[in-house]
Amino acid sequence: MMLTHSALLALATSLLPFSHASYHHLRSGPVAEAPQLSLSVDRTIARVSVLDTPLIRAAQAYARDHGSPFVYKHIMRSWLFGALILKHNTTLSSTVDREVHAVAALLHDLGWDQDPTSNSHIVSPDRRFEVDGAIAARTFISSQLQHNLFSYANGKKWTAQRIQLVWDAIALHTQPSIAHHKEPEVEVVAKGIAMDFQGPGYGVTREECARVLREFPNDDMKKGVNETII
Image (tube, rainbow, N blue to C red; front, side, top):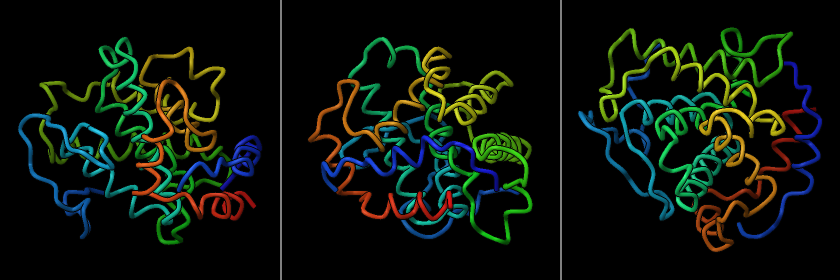
């Protein structure tokens, strides 16, 4: 795996201690309780309201199976922080495709997959981990489409444009100077991920962040990032 983003390591060392192919067979645990929804609904995680669709549940399970525990907690925090950003920004919340945001946030670190049994089809020897993750996410969504394992949220089909948004959001999530000037989905994914390193921002309160951290603690984040990069 080729990890070239040195800024990520710098962010990890400055963590704020503000408080602590088909995937229709979901693994056991909370993520496995996936109803086959005909319409999108919301569920609440750490008192944060998030979109709930079969594809989101499948992406959550896939990320859990293809990442270490610290990565899984990181991607969950990143998703929830992004949802909180939307809560506090009516302009973004009215324009962002929440399913695209959720899937991209949940799958954004597939390029960090350390499972030796899966590295062959996710992690490459010569690409940035962001690109590996973006490619793996696109492959995952395409596999779900081929197997027709989920219903469309609010009637939105997974068009090439929506899949491209997921790809862009993942590929650019460590490049805020670009991501913040792309489509709002790409912007919010990057900002939610950055909040997990930098602390509250974009209108999200310290109390809201603390609730997320109680559900998904970040006590192993710095160590995990250091070990992954090194």
